[in-house]
Length: 138
Figure (spheres, rainbow, N blue to C red):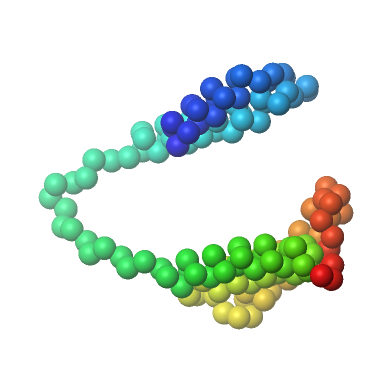
């Protein structure tokens, strides 16, 4: 994170950074790079050396269900976003990805997806006027 942040800052300084009231094209990369550097430093300083007297714990097996649900959710978002619009794509990505958690039920995933559709409609379609149709056919 530290190296990626420093690279982002270096690349962003090649553009006009500007100020908070008049942001240039380099402002965002420099700001994100600064946050990445701070996160990298926080991780580095909070890391602890392994205890040589600690007993080794068995490795956890990969959560294949979660991985598959997240990848399928992203694929569904891409396809439904192109052919169905913002609402079906948002519903699909949230619902399918939520099923990746073993503690979630179908009902809780359905409620979460419906709530995210409402929030997405208000934020992206109404407030930000995103040029992405709510519903489209084909």
